[in-house]
Image (cartoon, rainbow, N blue to C red; front, side, top):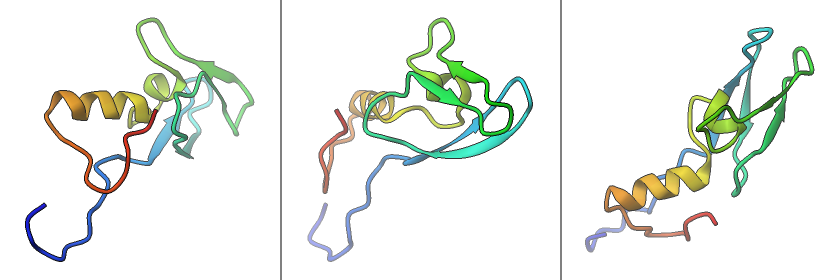
Length: 88
């Protein structure tokens, strides 16, 4: 950051809108620091997991990828962290 007094904001999206392919219900999930192997739909109770080639349930069924994938994407785009450490 330059010499301004602007507050630093995190480059990470911390919520993902999850969508159940079985019943169509959507719900907002606050993303934990780790990937999410399974997510239970609050509408029908189906346990959703990662699809083939997906990292986790969030990456497979959410509109925002999990924090580890976001961190990897930001690293490849040349972004550094200014106020907080990248999720592990």
